[in-house]
Image (tube, rainbow, N blue to C red):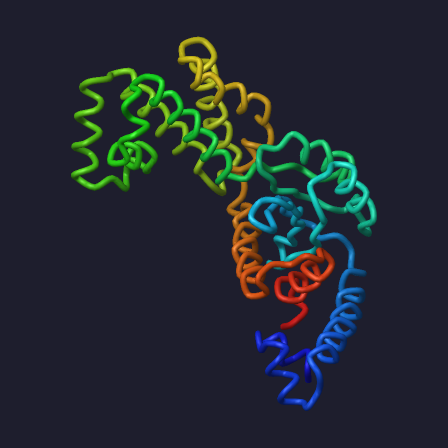
Length: 294
């Protein structure tokens, strides 16, 4: 009953008063109950579809790595820090690692190497959000180099980052005036929008993927031979992550589930005013985000 009340976000002080116990007793009961529950729950094999990403604790001073079960929309595990050795050691403890089918992740070469070692039969899929963000980042860096005043003009920066189809008439007029003064930004903006639209496609069949593949290769050649230095970096990254990126076309899923849980983890941290003990933090996250309190 105490554990059930805690899962409804009732604080320890209120629970202690309701059951006539001390707060330390309530805390001990919750820990014992949840440790047992999580120990039983983590005995199930590694999920078939995994999302891996990092998040911060204590305002960026401490990191943790999130392992999400994307098929069941829950957190499978939290690993302390982002040390490659520590992450690899923890992942190799999972049962049936060889049966993991898909792993969604951002464009991190370190995570990719770990996944290849620990999940040898899994296919790596790049997370669409991070791919689009990478393109936007290099495009904005080019714009700031092409016209120095842009970096201090928020009314221009926002429309440049925004999807072209979502622009308001006022934002379109702002960009039109910018493009008249700087045609190079106009050309790169048009190219950026075409590339992002291509990468946003989902659930494509084999014939559609072949057409998309041809278009993407043509764009990569343009970036390699004709684009400014900052835009060339987009082509270099796409070339390094070519196979995980083109796999995005087959699926609707992405690592957004993991990012959503990161938001919930921030709320857990705020409610407790931060955690000094990582095991306590991991316990709370697994209880509230691991599907154990359903």
